[in-house]
Each structure stands twice: as structure tokens, then as C-alpha cells.
Length: 88
Image (cartoon, rainbow, N blue to C red; front, side, top):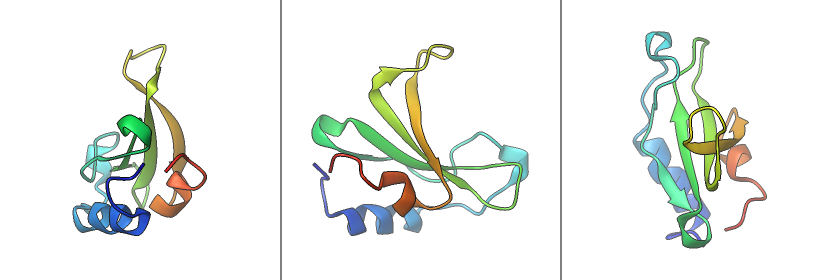
């Protein structure tokens, strides 16, 4: 369950969004926003080597086989697309 409404989640994430900087490709470009039942998911913008940030959803219940960190389960061009259809 979102700690706030989905629109509040997206709005607060956008408020803390940094402009994309290709020199920082792979680093977070926003704060993480935790959502889902028991805080399962995190939404964050990530710097890319291209023109715009990409939005990623991390799943705390799945582990990345290479890094051992929460697995990226979504990568989209907007936060709305990234969280669409996930448990809320």
C-alpha cells in the first residue's frame, strides 16, 4: 500500500528530480520512493548516457544475481509507466 496516494508519490518524486547528467550515468537522479505492501518496491529516476533520466522500480523481494541488491523489475520513460500495474 502506498504511504500516500499514487499521485502524491509521483509528485514528490518529481520534486526531488535532478536534471539528467550523462557523466553520472547509472547513479540515482532522484530520491527513492518506497511503495507497495510492506514497502516492497522503490521507485527512482536514474541518470543515463542519453537525453533523459530513466525510471526504475526495484523489488526488495527479488535479488539481482550479479549484485545481490534488489532486482530492477521495471525500466520506463516516465514514473507513471514504471509503477503501472504494481501492487499499491
